[in-house]
Amino acid sequence: MSAMPREGDLAQEAEIVWLEGIEDLDYVRQALDKVTTRRGKPRYERDGRLVGYTNLSPKARALPDSGLFVRRTFFLLPHDRPNQPGDPDGPYAVGSPLEAVDPRTVNVGKPGAKTPRSQATAEIETASS
Image (tube, rainbow, N blue to C red; front, side, top):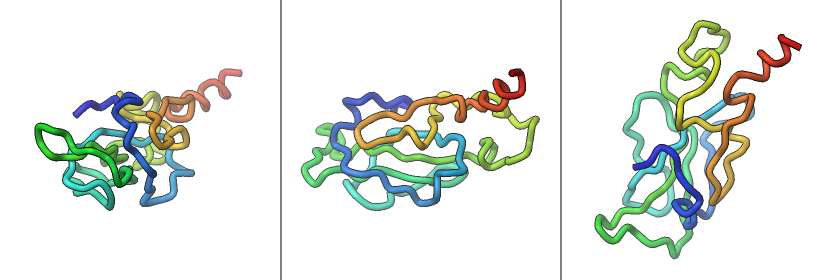
């Protein structure tokens, strides 16, 4: 599905479940996945690790064409900056992937957002001041 969810895509969300602490994560990738259940840890079939997911409300409706539910997952790939601390030459030493958001901006029913922290620009702005 779409890498960039819109609020309308998230209207059936009831809660966000984080599988690990997000305090030290500059960003997580978010995606909309089609799954068979409204709640519980969804199947994860990407490289890297699942960091979190959303549960839907009990009245959430499945997609009419497939019978599947649309839920957000939050994950990191092996080469992402949060997995490579202290690597100034990594692929995301500055910036972040298109679908990456600061996990502190993620809320039920609202897409996450990029921030200076997720873009690794806070350190650059501080250093150039």
